[in-house]
Image (cartoon, rainbow, N blue to C red; front, side):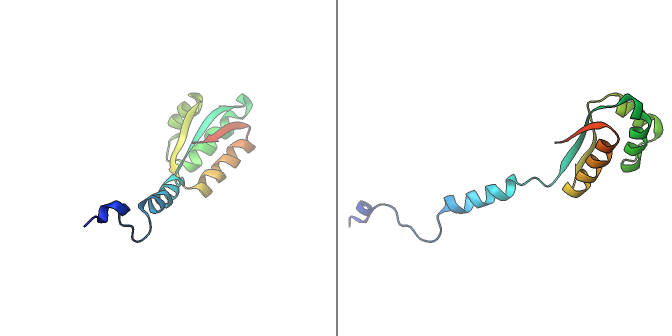
Length: 99
């Protein structure tokens, strides 16, 4: 009949538009890693205590973790919790980044 002369039939929203909306939602990050880059040596004990407060590490494990900086001290946390940890550690003289 010659219907193919007019191109493909189009009905409903294009798949391109719906997939790009899904990509935007997938691109929004919901879990963050808190990484201790470096710290002021004078504040080492305070930083170890703070790391212990938001992790379930013992004293030795927290000390070893802090001394291995740069190291991820908390993985997969929500944005609000990550920001709270970030501010506390920065207040103690540490350089911290979210990953």
